[in-house]
Length: 148
Image 1 (spheres, rainbow, N blue to C red):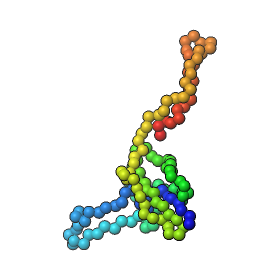
Image 2 (image 1 turned 120 degrees about the vertical axis):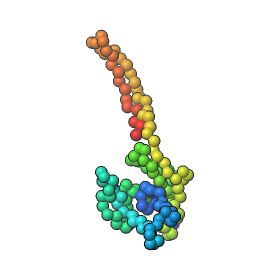
Image 3 (image 1 turned 90 degrees about the horizontal axis):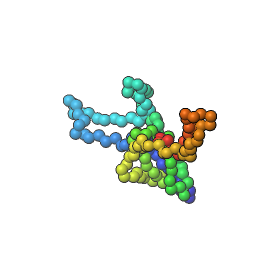
Image 4 (image 1 turned 90 degrees about the vertical axis):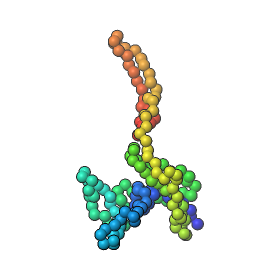
């Protein structure tokens, strides 16, 4: 039996929390209002209007998954995120005989990568600027982290 893990966004519909509809606020004059949710490309144009029609079964823009990870994997780095944007992530375990089990998230169930202060420059050096009496030469290497 091959066991593996996968890391995905909270739902199959991308980096969004589950949709909850409060029936107390959905109404019309005929008392037959209903809510229909279609998943699909959720890309927005400059006027905040959907760029395309949602087609059920499509993954939304920016939906990502780790794909199957080895059974000994206990950590996974999700790179390329946008600073200040909220992300919802889950982990599920699966095998080749029974498929995937229930997804599990952490508490709190979302995280926002914060803007971070860059690290300090490395190997800072100052020297006489040979041939000049009114300046010095400063050299340095970039920090390990640029703050994102």
